[in-house]
Amino acid sequence: MDGKQFKVGPGGGPDRRSRFRNIGFIALLILFGMIFFAAFRQPTQLKEVPFSQVISDANAGKIKSITINGDELQITRQNQTKPTEKSFKEGGSSIFEQGLQQGKVELSNKPGGGGNSFWLTLVANVLPVIIIALILIFMFRSAQGQGQQALSFGKSRARLYGTEKGKVTFKDVAGTLEAKQDLEEVVEFLKYPKKFEGVGAKIPKGVLLVGAPGTGKTLLARAVAGEANVPFFSISGSEFVEMFVGVGASRVRDLFNKAKKNSPCIIFIDEIDAVGRRRGSGMGGGHDEREQTLNQILVEMDGFEQGVNIIVLAATNRSDVLDPALLRPGRFDRKVTIDLPDRKDRRAILETHFKDKPVGKDVDLEALAAKTAGSSGADLANIANEAAIIAARQNRKVIEDGDVVAAFEKVAIGPERKSKILSEKEKELTAYHEAGHAVVGHVLPDSDMVHKVTIIQRGPTGGVTWFIPPEDKSYHSIIEFKDVLARMLGGRIAEELVYGPDRVTTGAGNDLQKAAELARDMVVNQGMGKGLRDQVFHVDEGMMIERLVHEREYSDDTAKLIDDEVEGLIKEAGQRARVVLKANMKKLEELKNELLAKETLEAEEVIKVLEGSTMPKEATLY
Image (cartoon, rainbow, N blue to C red):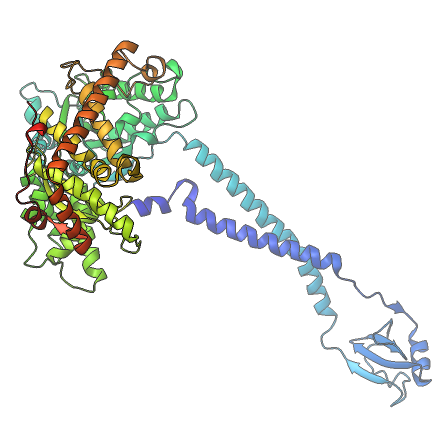
């Protein structure tokens, strides 16, 4: 349906306009060609002489040749290469009957007659007029098309679904059971409005879908339209806003007018935070175009006539920045939260995406679902697609378990870069670094389990030590975060212990950045500081004025305390990692040697090497 809409537009559509544009271009080329030909063509001006003189000079041998074109004679004299004179004989008799002697001059006949000259003259005079007329028509049509585009500038660009084949229903959406149950009521509202009106219930005017990117908000909205079997207008919040004031509001009015004509129907506004942010948060004041558009949305949603069966679905990742007037009852009456899928839902989503693919018997989707904690539905769809690509690249007709594992690792930690060859010194350094992460993470009791260790470059990293939680977690404790911090610093501390403090490299740059972010989040947002326990200092990122005028909502003294807390967490994590590695230097060497020999170690191999490692008392948190 999208393709058809792009082919047909106001004023005949882009295809028709392009055809007229091509015709006008060709007509211009022909006209310029004729002008060029007429300007540079040098017509031959022949001198007219009496016929008697022509006959006399020809019989005297002064004329080289005569070209006869009807009654016109073109004369070429001796020592000349083309005609310079012309004359006319009497009609109805030959030139010999009028006095020319045989053999005195070379004669030739030019085919055609004077009639051709008339038609050539006519074409030469009329054709430019026709071409100029075509050019004028083309110019008028172009101006008309631009006028229609100007008139349609304030029209809504929403795409209409609901008549296409292969509609999406709730059966096509795996997981998100609670969200589907909430939206099933919306379907009933659209199908059986009198059922609810009979008991005095008002049909909800708006449903806000909130969730992380890739959780299926748009898919669920289309499933609602498919289940209700009603038209579905889809538009992005950013499509309302233009640089010209009033255009967004005009498009909102046009969208709702179209919806009323197609009632009952659904309007779906994706990424509504692009236009629905809290008023007063921008720099444009009350005349800001985005705020004008939001005001029009508020009026339209609260101004539906009685009996108009229209429901507005909207999706956003940031409901905290939306204007309160947009969220009040009577506008968006319901808020449906779509969380990241749990293990059971991930299994169902994977089965949906692998359903139409040839999958081998060795593929274990349950194991894949267990390893993909924190993945969204879009991530899982990407894994299924990458697995099919890998199988096709290796000329296999069936997706094997190795393809699925490779696809998961490619999506999670990036593709392998085997083409980049490291020197032996760099390989040893990388092996020590990754082994440091693995040893600290394995020894500390509240760290996640080691899944894979490799010194092959993946994406931007020189090597990867991959930890995966054994189960889905909704909450994390201070002890867990501190173990993660120590694990992050394990690579840098391993380099320091082996090569010395002044020989550490830039390989830990990403680890240090993530550790600093986690430590600051613990103090600022989670209230997990030592001296600032149970206090948060979060600033609303959606408020532009707050960020520009009040960069923080706490004093300089508090900012210094926060910096001290972050520094203390980082130092404590580094000390714990140092204690663990000093107590397990032998295991660090063994794991480094295994990595140099095999380059990649799976979880079982790492656990086997680190069997017997010790947890020093100094690294215990009390």
